[in-house]
Amino acid sequence: MLEQHGENGSSEIDSIEEAGSGGSGSVSVVELKRVNKIRRDFVANVSHELKTPATSLKLLAESLVDVLGEDPEGARFFAEQLRDETERLAKLTTDLLDLTRLESEEGIQNPQPVDVRSILMVMLARHRPTARRKNISLSWKRSGRAATYTVRGDETQLTSMFSNLVENAVKYTPVGGRVEVTAESDESEVVVRVSDTGIGIPEKYLARIFERFYRVDKARSKETGGTGLGLSIVRHIAENHGGRVTVKSTPSEGSTFTVRLPRG
Ligand code: ADP
Image (cartoon, rainbow, N blue to C red; front, side):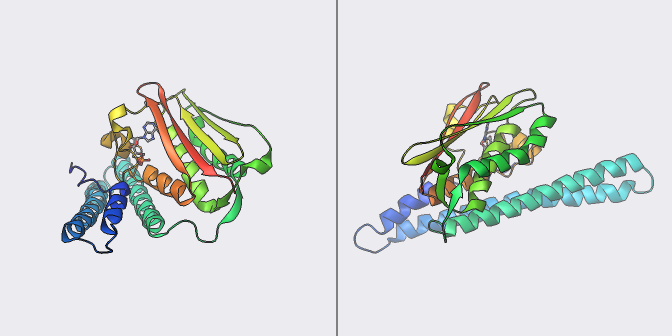
């Protein structure tokens, strides 16, 4: 398995852009080379991430052809694997397109008032069947008046952000665990926490999990259909809304992701 190329998290790009505009308005050759290296690393990572499922699809299709007509059980097995791998490839391309769009936009185009509580309710209903299949309780708590949960932003992006966090919480929590979403607000912000009793994340990885393609356990992430882009998307959406996302986690006990959004 090829390792991740370089550190292509956007935090590094931010610091380069700041250095590049350092007063004089000129960008040095060294800085340009660094930016180019980050771009090359990103293209190398994307190519690798696309190559793996493409190779699997070819092998699975060949295996299916080999057993067709002779081994119906085997044929079914390879056909199902083909379907899963195709879904993974489709999710990867959708996530990549979403991320590229998010990174090229500054802030939100045409922000609208969005009620965070109703987004959370719809989103939780969407994840309930998957949680039920793993016997995971998915609950939610909120306090205060509905009117205080309005932020200005893009409803589709906000839904995608919370959906990514709940999907991860369910994915990385063993059978029989708990996932809880809590929402509260004060005069200035809406705070949403997604907590789970899952596998947790060792402290040394916490700073890296928001980078593109970074996974603590690559094999497990792939097994569960992960693309390694979800948290990167979450961070961009939170920041595009003037907010931020943070995480606290204890291995084998669970994780809490907290999103803070300014009230609209
Ligand atoms: P993936 O598609 O691999 O889930 P993400 O960007 O959503 O990618 O998350 C990056 C990595 O962070 C995951 O591969 C996993 O190692 C870790 N992670 C994310 N959410 C959780 C969670 N709730 N519990 C434990 N680990 C998590």
